[in-house]
Image (tube, rainbow, N blue to C red):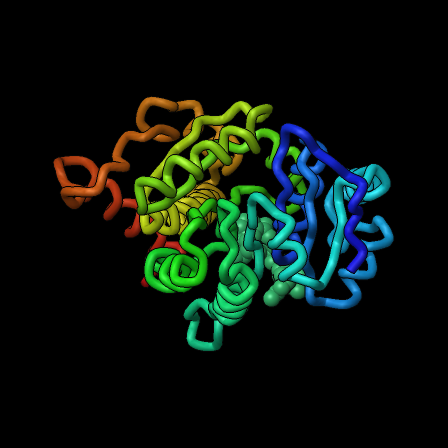
Length: 299
Ligand SMILES: NC(=O)c1ccc[n+]([C@@H]2O[C@H](COP(=O)([O-])OP(=O)(O)OC[C@H]3O[C@@H](n4cnc5c(N)ncnc54)[C@H](O)[C@@H]3O)[C@@H](O)[C@H]2O)c1
């Protein structure tokens, strides 16, 4: 293990980042630039070697330079020794992959493995620590799979889900200017520790803090991505209709986006009744009919 033992950060915590892929590498470099001592834990030998020589394991504008700077300053280390890293840490972030399996369900193998490793590594530890699950996981994962295992091993641990909102291509900028800082935890005493940790980590980041229960936080992350997918699909459908009808798709969607009262707004986003009234069903049918005329099919 090659941790830089000389680094002493007085006011900011030591963070162990488990999984140094896209989210882990970007967040680690950004946290180090805020004064944290970050110890990245990575199992892939190629990525680990790159990190240990000050190279970024993923491509992202500005990241190589920041990783190299943080590595040289001793604020960003990397290791494959999870136990040593988490024992040295005040905050443990988990950013391992949660890909789809062949049936479309979430493969939680990496998260489950890390949870078991954490439970073993922190057994009998008395120092208070906060564990933040940054991976996107199905609602209930933190409360039913992660919290019971970790708390059984180490009662002084606070656990939360803490979704990440960065986008590939603008990830560093997104880290510094997120739309919001969300976390979800269930135990009242965990909430106090997590809240404190969030305020310390993000003291220089101007974004609303939104504490939730863990299931709400987990679902909120999926809701964001599903909504983004719906927006893209919607814009493409209107664009296709516009092209077929001889209208300019960009002008239509630009005008559409100017309405921040009903269109780009919280309007119509409260769960409850189905849509109805005199216009919404009639006008939806009208454009569905037009789409059929042009051979566009819907299911
Ligand atoms: N990529 C994005 O833009 C993005 C944005 C927001 C949220 N997320 C979510 O964040 C999570 C991570 O995504 P990613 O794109 O960074 O994944 P990734 O595959 O790029 O990185 C995951 C890393 O974890 C490592 N890893 C796996 N098991 C490990 C273990 N036991 N110990 C140490 N390291 C281990 C892998 O080797 C890999 O390098 C996912 O749940 C994803 O859905 C991703």
